[in-house]
Image (cartoon, rainbow, N blue to C red; front, side, top):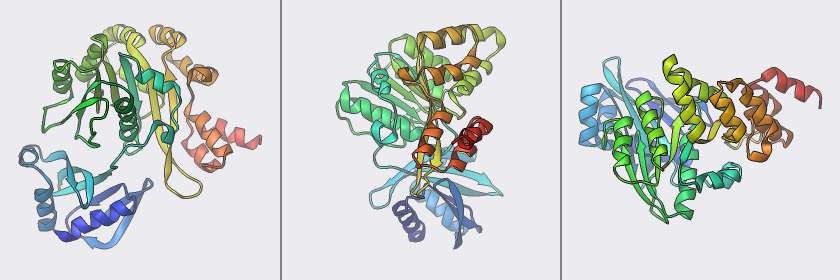
Length: 353
């Protein structure tokens, strides 16, 4: 098993984000978002099983035996911290392993707007962070929590699947709970969080209606809730959350969102033109008075133009951010076009230069 641990250590040094292993097949890595094969590197079924056994807890193995899949975190001082997603396929077990960074970046390092500091100072409200899988929402949320930890005396409860970045208490005090090892699911984790009298609650997902409703209840009770969801721009995130509900429930949900939403941060990662990694591109919506009105009146289609017009409030579209980065030669024009919500419009902007 030294081979697998050594491979993880080597990959961590090379800033590889993911390792995919399956018995008898070539292993794959993901670096800067690109999947690459590792020729000649494969593992037997026995090696993979032993690796899972050595990195998992008895509780994780119990869940794996029952559900044929489990997600857990593993940490080794000499190797690093990793998230394991173990699954059953072709009558055996495989694993997707992701490197977890030691320390989250700062808001400044991520390039997030100053208005976010004011949002994080608020006693209550809902901050939604969305991205496709592997595009950095976990890192961004960790940066938000890191800022709160460094500047405010808060009680912070997290509900994660699993706990990824472990926080050391600075000005704030953390309780980090892992699904399914510490609590069964997001809804139960958020219900139990309410009983812990937190100031801030972070949840890995509001994609389930019961968990989303409980997150809004926490906002109503005076908590700042930071919640992760899937990708899409800010308008698409709101549409997905609202239109997933039965028609008769949407008006009430729109009213609650208009009242409690403070900000949506949507992001995707773009490869740098110099080839040194990727950087986040942000689509940001701040819940101003105009935004509240649009949400209440079911006029979400106007959000994009408002984001473009009201940059003074800290709002921006992904396309605006892509254009700015391309104009500064940080990313290539082709990258900006390929990642834009409106590729034709982006192409026209470059043609006019």
